[in-house]
Length: 477
Image (cartoon, rainbow, N blue to C red):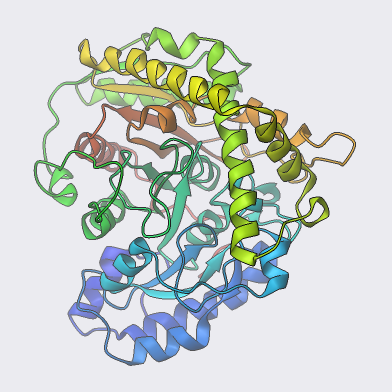
């Protein structure tokens, strides 16, 4: 059987050459999940019987025909399967999705075989997958540490070799944070690149988008080729790429102008994360790019946090109201985690005009940030997060201090939410490991609509400093 750490592209090629069957790939992946999941708790809803049946039948003849896949248990819904969003409320109600979302349908059309759902914090709020409903996901590089969030279950599963690729979504860093903490490539695409339909058009003023976490850059590009594009009624449409995202891997980006941003106004950055940026800067220079200390001045504006939190809190209040509508009754305080309820109560304290003013301020912030690219820069280099993967248990929010986890999260993620606001594509690359063996990602941000540039540069960085051979202590094979 093939190596557990073959990427999805290589697995699909084996199927196309008939050297392995989809049923064999699925059986092997299920075996790996069953062996590793008791220690990692990455997969919280198995879908094994359905997957075995589907793999033995007629699969769509897509680019990833027969390749095992996992969905994050948030937003991207698969018809007839449980969807809990990290909540005890939906878990105990036995709620099941009534239909595929457009993105789930595109994953299936691409040929992926869905093996199950991965862990996420309640409603995706925190940068760690430690929901009360399902328990913590543990990082395969060090099981005392977080795998990140909110796509932490997907990241742990891919890093450990359960599957080669898994779905994630990102409203403040939720693809890039777990990619950094688990040693993966994680791209947040441009706003509107992937559709949120049919149930959702916009989440929190355009903060949220969806894609995947992968071990290789080429897998991320090929999956985006397969699933990108608007659906009828989408409120945002990303500019179409000049060619395919996969073709961009072989394109020469030419000499680029790269700025560095590593000193946020909100707090300190761990020396290992600074070292990661310094190493990436030297690597970019060795590839012929000009790197300098420069960043959009708007990133230093202290008013960002308040406006972002207003939008985030109002959005979470709306999410709880949506759950009430979904269940046909009013959700009660004790049915949600203390942080979730406190954040929603904060959201309810803002008036409609206050929410719109916050959104307007953030839209002005977006213009000020993106002017830096318009003025001649190509990429911004930052740490992905401000510290190595934190220990589990640091994001708790007791009833007497229900927002404690949110304040802890703010210290971890001063570099990612800004680009959910601007809608720009941003990727975390696993280019650094600490002395004690923990992965440390760096973030590259491109201008709006420029995923092709990110893929081109990321492919060259992957070639210059390969990470494919690294295996966490808890892994398959």
